Image (cartoon, rainbow, N blue to C red; front, side):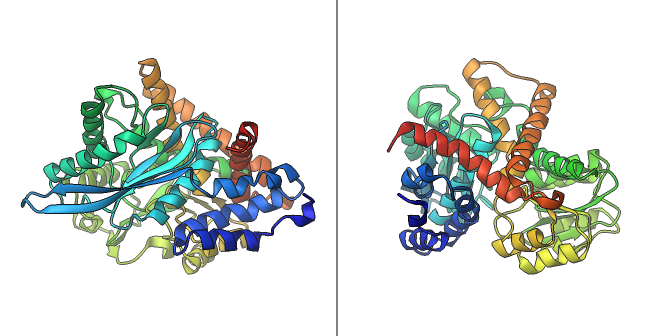
Length: 450
């Protein structure tokens, strides 16, 4: 096949859209990767002949199943569950489980596709997968959540295993939900094995796992700043979200001498010009994990702070960390950040910036760390939890913290290797996409047509 005979990006994406009608999130994720990969593959005929990107954009399998459970009022409820196993060329499928009303097959396919490249960047032997259900744990009793998790696992257990597919937590799935699912897996299989990560430390969980994604996003930001001769210290930051990732990102920014100005949830955001100190962060953690309250309650506790509807991207700051959910930062909001002098953006969430927003950052030459690189710390420590479970050992937080720091520095190095542009600007999106793609693609080439 001659290079001139290759399909172009537009034709390729038309095929993706035709095969996945109405799956806008998945199509967006594929397009974001494909536009960089097509340029990289231009003179690499073997990738084209083997249809490598076409194969990556088609999950190995999508498992869909019914989840029946009974609420506290004895009503029978029916949800839909999924597990998307995208690619296991470099290791067992690995990726979180999300419980949220917004979960659809499209969302999970996009997350599993992104996870493939993210896991590749860590250097650990993990493939890409994602799962979840359109179940909302908010407002549910512990007993209701337990019954749902047990029903969900009663189907999922057939498709996972420590050498096959190792799920973790995600939005709506924390330690409580992981515990219920692991207990049901153990009951059904009569096996204790590292089939889930994010477990409690009492039963095989790893230290540093709760902190890893948020800390890792800040470490990646720190590496970007260092590459340009700057540091986190003395800079202000706006952060979206108020869950595990956001609060730990805020914690690490504060530890490094920065000042966090905002946190948010689905109801709006709080702006604290005095800075969200460690004491205030600890209060938010308690609010969200124990009281399961709303971020608006912050202004009743701390004077000087204000609550606003919407998202925090209009607040002037040096650094921005979107840590809530996908497509939460659009073109107009990106322009607001740039207009207010933002220096760097590091994504703690998965695909939180729209394609139009990414273009704004790129055109303005803003340091922009995409989620597949910047938030890979979470899955990296999940991979280390898998290793500890396999060896029946437990590493301390100091050792894991050093390993996380080294992993994020390594990911940054891979991004700069393939993303360095003339004039000193680094296109971290291109660097992450190419570095993540190349490892998976070369493994797939070694296996032949499978």
